[in-house]
Length: 104
Ligand SMILES: [Zn+2]
Image 1 (cartoon, rainbow, N blue to C red):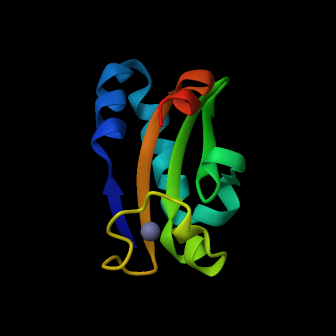
Image 2: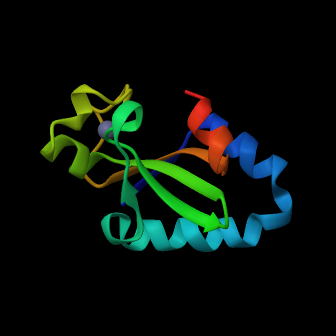
């Protein structure tokens, strides 16, 4: 599995250092089973997956294999998708539910 962290995700992880352990646990779970753990998003966020870290606090990520299968890679801003292996997870954002969705 190829794992990438976007800068926005890393920044948020630093900001929310108090829940770092929780975040890390979730990241491990997502890496182990990206499809089962996450929930596919719709609308503006089509192609993305979300996974709750705790109440009202989510991780947003991309899983290249799935988004290609569904044709979502044409919708999603997955810039280097052509070069990444199928089994690539990109951690995009982390934050309180409302803020995370507003940021794109
Ligand atoms: Zn991709």
